[in-house]
Length: 146
Image (cartoon, rainbow, N blue to C red; front, side, top):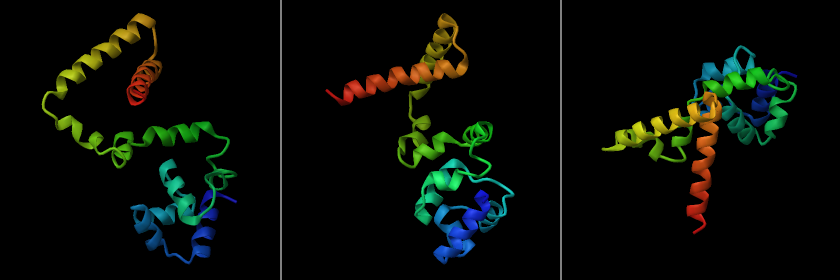
């Protein structure tokens, strides 16, 4: 059974209209229709919300669909997500910090740190981001545990 078939079946079992599902997920009714007819695939974050809405596991939704077993499809979806926007719902500072006076000096310093780290250790862009993120996360955890 395709992801679209599962979504259609679950929506009908839940007694919801496409419009009601669309309202709950903050998408258009047409988007829900395209998901249910396998014309498009929902973003992973929407799949997570759909699993909660229909009270089924995330794995149930993606297993057997065109997402499971095809890491390229998943990576393409993940790459399309605006992570700043997605995380800013939980952490509002992400939506507003760029307007903070003086923040540009930190952007410049962190950009230089990024460039230096990448060059010194011959990291690619992704590895540079992951290493710097990990260093910052460890610092965050240490501060939190004080």
